[in-house]
Image 1 (cartoon, rainbow, N blue to C red):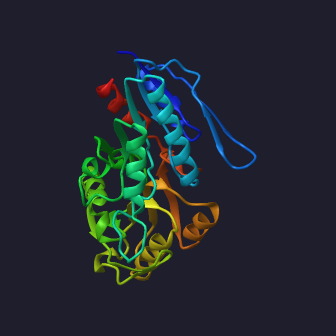
Image 2 (tube, rainbow, N blue to C red; image 1 turned 45 degrees about the vertical axis):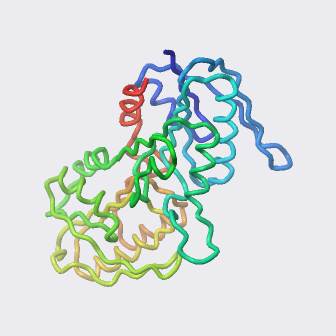
Length: 294
């Protein structure tokens, strides 16, 4: 069966994956009309084909979700055999359940929207919320890749003195443990108390950080509050150099400046969200995954 890769308006990663996989690259037409509506047109012949549709849903998630739903629904209408949604960064992944009466179950709602549009399989990278099986949550198969080995390779190039891999909270254990194993290094987790959406408190730093270089590892950085408080605690405890590593850097220049001003040497991220911090590509990881599906 023939296959085609088609990028959305945030799908530039598809170009790298097309080159690596040898799969042909198509396109869709996406425009934003003067009244704010999205116009989507699929000029490609997708009938009977597997369509691998790329979109990283960061920074303008609501608009990009609508674009994605329009595109997927159109692929289905045009007779695509299977639609594989490749969303390296998937939004609302931190809000899986309603915590306060009346609060929207954002992820459940978005998952239903994507499934109803016609996605058959979804590929994502380091999806944040993992307390339930993602395939059960979305109602169709989810392939959740991790970029931690690729990030570990980049970390190994740094000149580190007795490095300690640090997770900024207990949830980060699943990422920190991979990096520590890859680098044959120790790791520890900090304890975090979240005050609100933009403010956290790190209760204390471990005692064994004195003079050691630190690599803080997490799946995403958004507001930067957790990283900033973690760096403060580690610096107070007498650590050496501090690097920050994540899969998804969903941050602006102001947040990056605040992180660097706290004494961080560098922030290293992947191209799941394309920014100036995207020093590691997940394209080979995704190309391997789609070759197995094609």
